[in-house]
Image 1 (tube, rainbow, N blue to C red):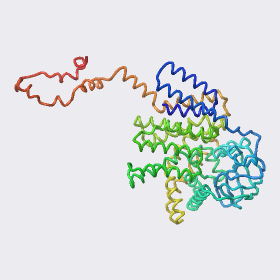
Image 2: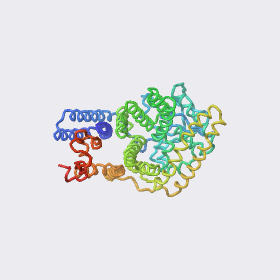
Image 3: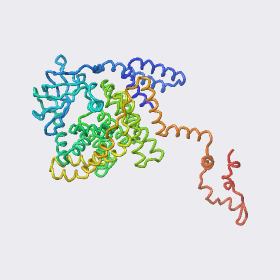
Image 4: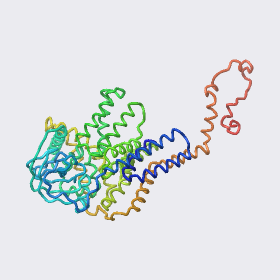
Length: 527
């Protein structure tokens, strides 16, 4: 519980500032008055200090972008990711450069750019763009959701681009590798199926047609092509299986190899906020396993989120960060409870995981877009298994295609079929009418909605029932438990052993009573 409280204190301090620190101090003082203990006091002090550091760091957050502010025709831009190329267009994220503070990129307006195919730009290039820009608040809800998924505040259709500066870097090399894997996958599976496989492996889904992108948005399936915890979990599972076969679970290289592979994949996919958080949690879980301890995922998720917002307070305002933390925390709570209750059948896990993620993210989506996808739950129940099947095969096909394209095409065949089925399901569930516009709720309604969702998640996890059962056991132990407590006072095997002295006093054929025969009668055996 200490780790959960520390992570929550960091998030609360950054998000709410010094008022939250005062509230935490009041709660800690009351708790100390009720329970005077040195160790407990040290924990309360740690929580208070972390909240204070969070409030201090929260003062450095960048002011949110105003509704009427757009970057316009800035003189120069910095390319923030490796562009996705589809033959006639290239798609990338750029930030307008503040010439007074050239190093300040995070606080700049992040713009999703659609540009012509030539000249081809690369990561970290400085370019001059001309075209019309629009703020995210001025576009349709579906377009705004797509921009938010990529962390953009505005969109720009560039009529022309000119490269002003281009410098080699490690990030550029990794980005070029990611781009080559995407090209390999799109060659192995043409059309939107290839774009989907590229999105599953690298998170790059910029090549979708407008109609297909609208279908993914309406069905609530855009998270499939955003690299997050589910992708890292699959990578960790594959590396774990390979490491178990080759090195053995107890070798030191086993944990080092898996952690290195996880962070290598995170770098390959662009080190997006959800990916970094998932990589931190996965690495901590593997280290816990290496030292013989069971990983507590709710604690690790909150600690990772707290560390991230302390290092960069602007994460707390990113929709992707909020959705990632909320969904992963809900999954950790609900799935852990379902497994503990022996309800770990695959259909039940899929339905439970999808429902939990939808409940946890609804308050954030509703307050951002004012719309609800009424087909999101059934759509995700159908497409999630298809995505889990296609992703590892597509990753292998993308790498193999770099070596020999025909091999990549052969390996990608089953993943292409799964991708086609997934796209068909998305088109079905994402038909017109998939969105229900309800408007942005006020703050009070949002708080009530979040509290209701948290209560539903607790009920789904079964924690309340388990606590009630524990209390019932303490108040009224069942008969079998009482009998076991009586029998545990002496060795049960003593009833089967022969006693030589007893045999001499009572020769054979002479009846003798035994106290053990009355153990089942609790009225005679219990004090």
